[in-house]
Amino acid sequence: MTVQRRRAPRMLPAGLRALRAAALVVLCAPLAAACAAEPVTQEEADMAPERERMVERDIAARGVSDPRVLEAMRSVPRHRFVDPRQARGAYGDHPLPIGSGQTISQPYIVAHMTELARPGPGDRALEIGTGSGYQAAVLSPLVEHVYTIEIVPELAERAAAVLDELGYDNVTVRQGDGWAGWPEHAPFEVIVVTAAPDEVPPALVEQLAPGGRLVIPVGPVHAVQELRLIEKSESGALRDRRIAPVRFVPMTGGDGD
Ligand code: SAH
Image (cartoon, rainbow, N blue to C red; front, top):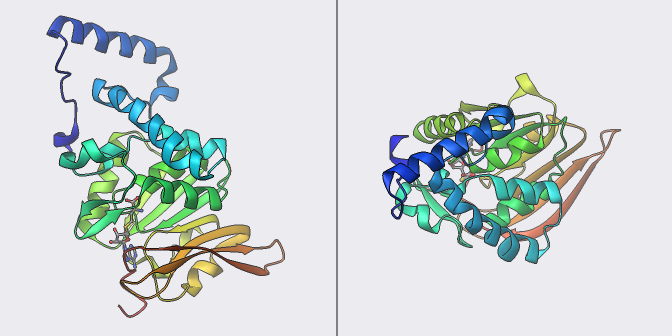
């Protein structure tokens, strides 16, 4: 975790840097709780305009309009979830490698899927495919708690460490196969799947709360898949909508992969 932290700003003398750091601490002190997930380093403050541009140009302009989702996309330091060598390009309109052959989705897709899931303040959310932890961080301020499962141990460990370091303390990461969901914490009002299975895992539909929303890419490995929104009514009836063609890494594990 050390590699990603606190690159000293190039232009300022040490005295001024210290002063600016102190000012940030003073500003945050009375608001300690509210500041927990706010940018507190100069590097993060420098990235805020990039995030703002990303939200305006690549997300809002394409039709994502939920103000809570846009605010979450503005607040989460995406560059902290990617390889430090990729930090400069973290706010570009494209997916990025996150190690172990996996990728973090393009910002628009993260925002679009989050909006489709209609996260509410009292909701429990389940994510399958923690990856870098970025999608979980975006969900974090929008729901009560995020449970997220990652099958690759190194990714699960790294995501848990970054989320912890950034103060996302309503996120629980588990290493394991998400095909079976997380029955101990079900039902979930929101389920977001960020790896594509061949078919919808039945356990995820079961673990969807009445009134809940499941957003999931479904389709064959290494081909274009379909993003689907499955909603469960209060009486338990399912409505399944095909939203858009997408391309995700395959879901491995329990479905026979
Ligand atoms: N949501 C992530 C990106 C996901 S990439 C982010 O914001 O960074 C898809 C992830 O799903 C990969 O990390 C992959 O290892 C994981 N994955 C694939 N099959 C899985 C399974 N059966 N259970 C849990 N995670 C799985």
